[in-house]
Length: 135
Image (tube, rainbow, N blue to C red; front, side, top):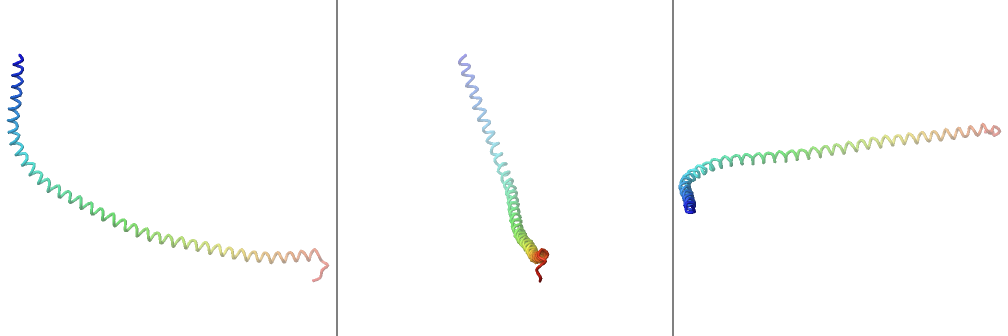
């Protein structure tokens, strides 16, 4: 039994070796044919891939240029907007300062007028309280 098992094992090994050799030669032919087909496919695919890669690189370049243009345009717009904002803010400040200075001027005139009126009223009160004094 051991011999049979040994022979059986050898046979199996022999078959495996035979099958591998036969399969290997078959695969060798298949590998050669497959390698040729793959090489042709790789060359065709390689040209297609190169074209596709070139198209993607063109898209990248175009997008990069678009972003660069947008950044430049945005910077210019923000600079113009910033200048306009600064000018407008300065103008608003100037208008308010002028308005408040005018209010101060009016208040000073009103104060002077009130002081004059107060002085006249004070003199009138004095004269009313002291009727004996002749002017």
